[in-house]
Length: 470
Ligand SMILES: *Cc1c(COP(=O)(O)O)cnc(C)c1O
Image 1 (cartoon, rainbow, N blue to C red):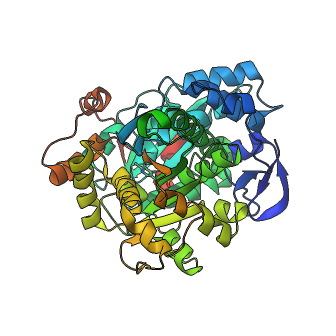
Image 2 (image 1 turned 180 degrees about the vertical axis):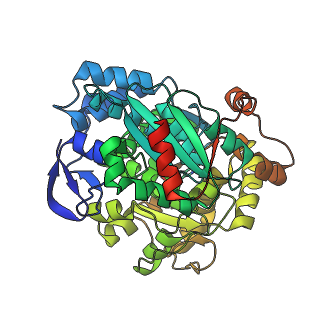
C-alpha cells in the first residue's frame, strides 16, 4: 500500500515509513492510505459472521502488502488480540459494542497493541532498542505502556503531570517494570508534552538514542480500530432479524469522540465494505466538530474539563483526515452530530440504566443519549424542519442521508462503549446510586507497587536522566 499525506498529495510513503515516522515531519501532515480496498465479498457475506481475528487479518492485509508477509501478520494479530469486542443488545434496536475487554479496559488497547507489534516487527533487525517517549494526561499512557510492555526491541518512557490524573490512572501508568517506566513531572500535561517535543528536536540526544513517538495520529493505531467496526456491523446485520424483525437494517454507529481517531476508523471500515449506513459523532462540551458540521466553520479551541475526560479535546487531530476523505456536504450526509454537557452526561448514565439495566461509562453515555433521542423523535422533528438550537445540547441541524430510515423504524444503533464504567466509578456511582462491577485486572493493578520516578519540569534534568538511564 502507498500512503500519502493530508497536506501534500504528492507525498508517497510505504507502511514502514508511515508507522515509524508517526507524522510527516516535512509537512506537519498525517499519513493516509491512497485507497481503501473493499473486503472480499465472500467474507462480507459470511453467516455466521467471520471471527474477529479473521476480520482483522483480512482488513490489515492490503495495508501491509509487500512489507509484512501473511504468516508474520497473522502472528502479530494473534499476539495483539487475545481479547475481542463484544456486541451486547441493550434493547430491540440498540446494541452496545463493548471495546473494554483488553488489558487497560478501554478501546485504545486495540490500536496501541497493533502499533506496538508492527513497530517491533520493523525494528527486528536493529541491534539497539527504539525508545518511545509519550506524554499523557491519562488513558493514552496506560494503553501505550501496557501495549509495549515486554514487546522485543522497544522501550517506553511515559511522562505524566504529578497529582493531575486519577489514582486508578496513575496505578495503570506507574506500576510497570522492565521496558516500560513512568516519570511523574512537577508540572502540567502541556509541560510534559513540551519536554517530549524538545527531546525530539534535540540532535545531541538523537545522536545517542533512537527516539520515536506513539501518539494517536499514527496510522498503525487508526487502521486496527476499523477491525471492530467491520466485525460488529457484520455481527449485528446477521442477528438483527432475530432480535427485532428488521431484515436489512440501516446500521448506525454512534461514536463518543474526542480526537476523532475512533470515528475515522469507522469511516475506513465503511469504505472497505462494512454494512454501515452512517455515524453519530457524539461529543461532550468540547464540540468543535458539531459546531463545524452545524456552521461550516472549523474553530479549534482550548479544551474544557468534563466527566467524559478522555474526550476533552478542543483541536481534534483527525479533523485533517476526515477533511482529506470527504467534503463538508458528504460529512453532513454521513454524520448526525450531537453533544452533551456534564449534567446531560450524568442524566444519560441514569437513563440508560433505568431503561435497559446496562451500566454505561460517561463516554458511552453520550452515545447512548444521542441514539435514544434520535430514535425517540429527535430525527423525525429534524426532518420535519424543527431544528434544535445547536448552541444547546442535542443534534446539529443537518439531516443525514439515513435519517428517514430511523423514522421508518428500519434502523438499529450500535453504541461504542469505549471504556469500562469501573474506570469512572465515582461519576457512575453518583448517577445510578450503585458501584459498577470492578474487572479483576483493574483491581489487581490497584494492589501493585508504584514505581513512578519524580522529575522536575526542567529539560536539562530530563535529558540527563534519559542519557544516564536508557
Ligand atoms: C480516547 C477515548 C475516547 C475518544 O476517542 P478519539 O479517538 O480520541 O475520538 C473516547 N472514550 C474513551 C474512554 C477514550 O479513552
